[in-house]
Image (cartoon, rainbow, N blue to C red):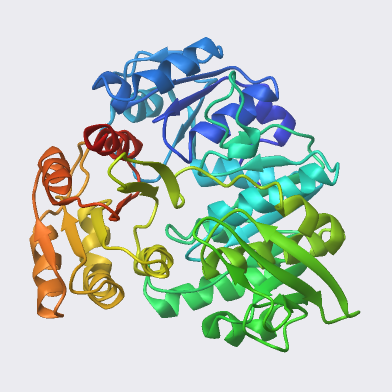
Length: 475
């Protein structure tokens, strides 16, 4: 990071965020502003009149908002922050280049804040990062460690009337808890004091590249918490320096579950956590369903143990963990008995975990899926089709819209209709309806008492609004 300014030099400069409303950008902007920096920004969604409440909130909090036309870049002293996906042709990018402004990607900025903290606690893996980041952040908060937390999702425990988009917590510089991303390779920028590794499966990159990225991540971590239930993670165990293992199924894991102690429910679960190092046992109550969330809880407990927090404190804190938005988030149940759920599932593993949780209770499932881009659909479309065909039963139905698209250049040669055809070829029940509003009308038409409707997808905050609109129509 030597080519970048020091932490103190950086915080003395004004920042401009291109795409400030994005799930990865907004928490960083909030952390910088909370630490005294001047922060301005623009967003294509604001210019298009979408998500007006979010941008009104930002202005009320003192963020200086501009149209995305380059007018907000006025001095070469400004630091332009943009995600790696922002095209060089965007006016802010052109204006920053003209003035010679320092440009940082979202990941570069986050890694500077992370690496200059007293202890950076990183959460990595294909699935579950946001949930475990929120869990671990909450544990450290309850333990009185005053963490700064950088997340890609709203953490319900930290939501207040003044801070409805609590995807960040501005604490001290001593502990910085953050999810770190492998999809763009930026995980390589982080040097964790504690590195948590949840799982490894196909998402944005091929498996060989993922194995290399995650293996290097373990080597850079001073101490690691690793999920030995996952075969791919287990294979990388020799690359970790010091390690605490966790697992629901793996009996040799240091932190595990007492056999036969798991009690599942539709909205919560209980289990007894055991530390095989000293034999200690702790009763866990988790207000979230699904075996994957039990594994997430163990990851947070193991990560907290790596950071010096006791298991008793960690397990007790999770009893009051309220979850994060768009992770099996129950919008409501209609008078006719139809439940609507909002969920972030967007890759094969995440979708499978959500669908398995739904199918662990009786009732038909209507699964709506909005792909989060043509690129990801091309990368993992076949695996997604297999997931929906395998996890759902003949009476269930999958409805897919066209991928989300907010502008820019994109190869749209392979779309949703191919995935729906693959689901059908795998004996699944699926429909392709290009427009999302038409999908909503079809879902309402199909819904019957006892059905569970799940709205799935990523990179689009309006999916929650869509789920709520279905609930309103049913009610």
